[in-house]
Length: 83
Image 1 (spheres, one colour):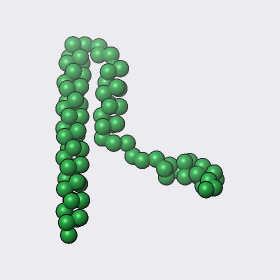
Image 2 (cartoon, rainbow, N blue to C red):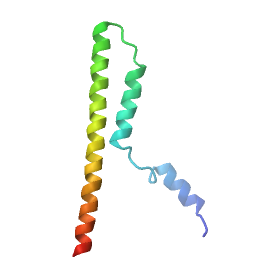
Image 3 (cartoon, one colour):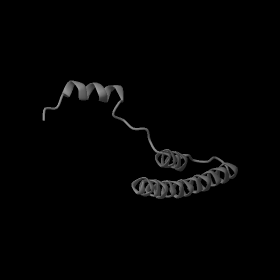
Image 4 (spheres, rainbow, N blue to C red):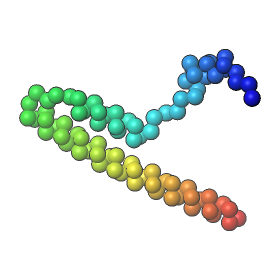
């Protein structure tokens, strides 16, 4: 099988091969950014703490949703096979 490097390079440069980041990746990125912020006051420290807690909750809920979607996709596949 011959690989067309010109086509491969063009798709890479145009971003056609890249997939969009998942919600989990976005949340992880925001968590890393927040952890690098240095609060200047107790108020800012509390706000960052609450923001981290909210992001952890979003992460947990997203994981539950992903599990539910996977389960539902499997159920749909089983139902389609039964037809």
